[in-house]
Length: 357
Ligand SMILES: [Fe+2]
Image: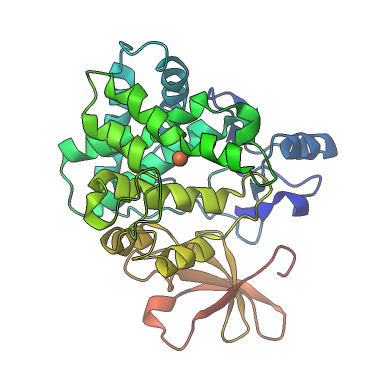
């Protein structure tokens, strides 16, 4: 299967990966053939890309870094907890702790620790899927930075709850596609302090978790908010969550903004290393992302067209590819595979748009 932007999706194309709602309910099951009505509905839900079954890519499996079950359970209990936590500070967090532990254990057992999946989610459920994504990205980064389990647990909870203060921001402001007014901007920025005050009252949580909510919009160079902290003044967990948060927002195409490819988002993060982001976090974060995820169609310097079939942490720009079309534009039959890492004369020059194959 491969990723197709929703505007390029056509009737009869087959869904390559089940699409879930925030409560784990199936919105559209894998294998279903699309109809104009389904496509309309997906657009209404704010879904911007879709995994589609593709013959030329055929057998290629795109694996998530954590299991679907763990991810869905985490989304579900984050939603429940975030909706209740404000009014009920004595809330039992056992389920959230368990969800965080499950994610950590799966990641620690995963040798690759590289994110190949583009997360597909409906925009009305945005906050919860986003929180779980930020948690997973933050945790992978921290594992590669050498964090132990105790610190990973604090980071996981901090990442899941980093935007808990948004439960106090009016919903229509969060989904607004036009720029915020100065007043709205001010109100929006308060989600950091509001989140801090919600979380610090919860005895079973480390105070550090509250500090992640407070500090996740601070910048390394002191230009962030709310306190303009700089460098090491920013909490070490918040420094990681900041990068994961921006990456997920850039790549999801939310609120009318263009969706960046993993490569474009990583380039932007590298460009802002030492400005917005802590360099030692960026250094580790960029290896957690597959720049050319499995299923991406690419053009090689030889003008041959290929699809990415495997990615490697050590060689972010040199995945294994399957060659599909030769430089004259003819199908290669049968297609053959090549490790770009061991073929230095071959390299990717660009990502192909839908229909270019
Ligand atoms: Fe935020």
